[in-house]
Image 1 (cartoon, one colour):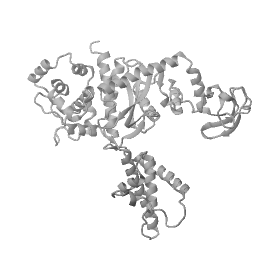
Image 2 (spheres, one colour):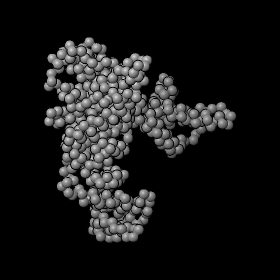
Image 3 (cartoon, one colour):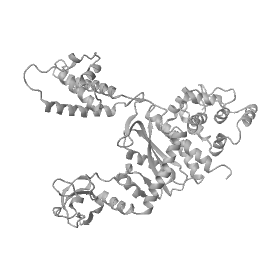
Image 4 (cartoon, helix red, strand yellow):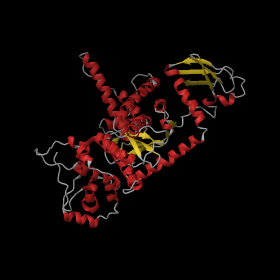
Length: 513
């Protein structure tokens, strides 16, 4: 592999010594972490070999250093990065450029990211983690896991645009289905009638939650026509028959389901085909990506991360991020996470690794302030289970479903002194369900949440991981996407967390100590 020369002349070195002081942060970074392995690690990604034809490539180490500056100094665009590196003595020195040497353009940066790919960025990140472990910045006593949103670098579709897009897509899908059906019989394709088109538009309006706009206006836009209020409304049938409201409602519900399926696969933002609309709470939504991080409590070193589209369940990101961290540092003694990660598979995997999990359980939705499942006593009797309600009465099993689901109903609810606190069911009978695999963890959690260790672990989770996310969003480009695809935003998250860890390495494990 042939790279452009990195040797600096004596004159240039002397200039950098004078204008980039030894106390400069980038000199500390250069001393704390050796980037030289990057050239050899990435060599197989380059075609140009020593003595072979082709233009010499920019050294991967230099390109990575230049990209790292973008996240160390909260630079928002690669064009701006190019300008800053060109103008700054410190940036030029850190990247290995001569005083009069042209810097790599934003196009070269794009080619570098595309060429190297996510896997090699993960390997470079892993080298930094090994360095942090070597410098005793990780102790594996307790890990914390949480996710943060990354807003897309694109504009979301408006409700009006969503309604028009869905109307077009559904009409095309229904027309293609009709065409296939009629072509197999040798008949010409049949166009959808105006009534069906209007139902499609109504379904699209409902799914997009568009208000104060008629379906006729949306349909006109989807068909590329000028909306005329009098002409575009569907005329009633010629006969005196009344419209079948129930049939229309059923068709609209079916079309709404189709529209939701189409929208889940359709880009949710202009310019970013992978960004999706997700929720951070019941009332707050965003469009972009979710990044889950595993953080060691000792110094807040981020051991692993996983980035997905915004509409993906947070719980699905846990095991990829946890497994990356475990591969690098081994299993922790304890792990704390919020209730978004209260999944049976997660608890079982942590148990198999002998990890004490401090994860709040999602309380089943119960109407009113009624007695929770922790007050029911479950005892194994042979292959079955005996359930005693809070009132001390034996409950009757009424259902045995898949995945170990068992449903019980009260036998003495009427006249029980706890009835008003135990159930709000219309028939006055309390139902109780549990899964055998889950019940063990529920009982452990009921006892665990009473302990001081449980409360302390959850407090430490908030005081450890929230400041890291806040710091990353303020200083290291975390929280706002720079790129416009899932693969590139995975790299974005890795680089943001790399910058945070590198900063901690310089601060807490300075050279010479």
